[in-house]
Length: 333
Ligand SMILES: NC(=O)c1ccc[n+]([C@@H]2O[C@H](COP(=O)([O-])OP(=O)(O)OC[C@H]3O[C@@H](n4cnc5c(N)ncnc54)[C@H](OP(=O)(O)O)[C@@H]3O)[C@@H](O)[C@H]2O)c1
Image (tube, rainbow, N blue to C red):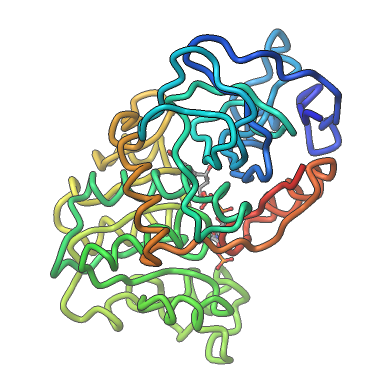
């Protein structure tokens, strides 16, 4: 079973088809996928966000999975050593991961930390490596106070935990319903949104929504009176960039993974696959073994919000397109 986008549009263009995975060639392995994680880029691939070139259709989706090696091709060596049948692995980068079986380069395979469930293992790497890159690019370390915008999403929860593991104090923006959870991860939560002036979350102010009649900048200053050293924009709103620029002195210590045009114009670190951005490929790939180690020792947890049958990918995409997933959505073949 393979899920692909047959056209550009909404989740209704997704099709479930039968397509054999094929034999692994030299340096490749065939895996039986037990879980594949969902990321916003998966629906952006067919939404038109990156254009609507019809020659690219149909589009295979997904980029990370966890499963069992069925067959290894000749010279299948991964970052942790030889790849052999029966190994439990995480595959990242794994283009076309929305499938029951998948051929991937052996270099994409990292041993699955035994402590993780399949769904957690599938959701560890893309968000983990992105957060790792953002913290490295902004040089976050002991004694720093870092503001993380979009802290309760997939990348956000990784960034909160990895920043804390680096010894930083974390100020985390999220909707108020997520604040207790973020506190349990050691972060200082604040509500995003502009306050009771008609442009805020719900415009109601002092009613338990977390808004206090002031803007995000003032709310951040209230919880971090000593100031900020760095900021990660994981959401791409003007509010996130404005507040980061207002509160962090050095532009080299502000990074965005979602506000590409604005980030390039402001001269902050712009990270990812967009033109002009730093993809950090080597750094992200090198982070995989370390992320697996941190997951195994319990320093880094993967929070799976919901799982869906692979055949019901459209429902998972409708959910993530809503913009308020807590952690990861995962597909089960
Ligand atoms: N450049 C790269 O390399 C790279 C890599 C991975 C992802 N990305 C991009 O980064 C973004 C985040 O990815 P993700 O996987 O973390 O997505 P996600 O899991 O869907 O993130 C959703 C989160 O965004 C929060 N949110 C919604 N509106 C917000 C606002 N106005 N201000 C602050 N937070 C808000 C929500 O928090 P509440 O529910 O608490 O409201 C929710 O937890 C996406 O645009 C994705 O495409 C880029």
